[in-house]
Image (cartoon, rainbow, N blue to C red):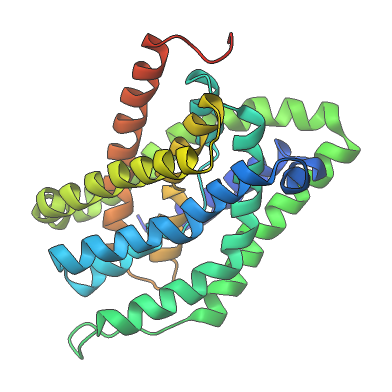
Length: 289
């Protein structure tokens, strides 16, 4: 089974479902509360890629794994972060706003980060890799930006229908991600098992360092507890499905091996975030929920 036949439609559906949860007002959060939005955007768009790059300099993975890790680091936050923020007693409105903004902004920033990453990785003739910035941008627009806009439009003009569709699609989001991971694991289990130790350690450190950086950034900007919890989750939780789709898409990289870090990341991310949520729930909640 060619995973691309599954991953690209699933990504499009997930982006459409994300749009169903958003409204034009979510993009106006910066004017109302600039400090937490700046912290979240800086953490995701600047700090996280820098942490990933630093870890790659330390561990020196092969070029394909390197670019796969950088692809995760420059992807937007996943829509599941909104649920985790709610359970952890975070600021759900802030979480939704950050998800909305990064989903749009990264459509245009991912090509530049990946262009740099591929050039820096120095692919040899044994592992050639094009730098498909224009194709990457076009696929981001078609498979991510347009579905999000359609979802937002449907919510605005047909809110009742949007709610009904979201109820169905939201329940399918996590199973779909696990399906993608399972398909890739079955097809590439030897490579995954060969890389899971070292690469898994890198990704675990990436998640923990990103969350720590989000917390420190929030404290430096004097954000409250609810906002701090949300920033930590948003910076630590990236869209693994998107990374898998971009890595394996024949229109962009067409390299299944590049998706391996995203598969491992998806598993570790959920484990770490569930542990963090459990920790938050044991403490006195910031607000009733």
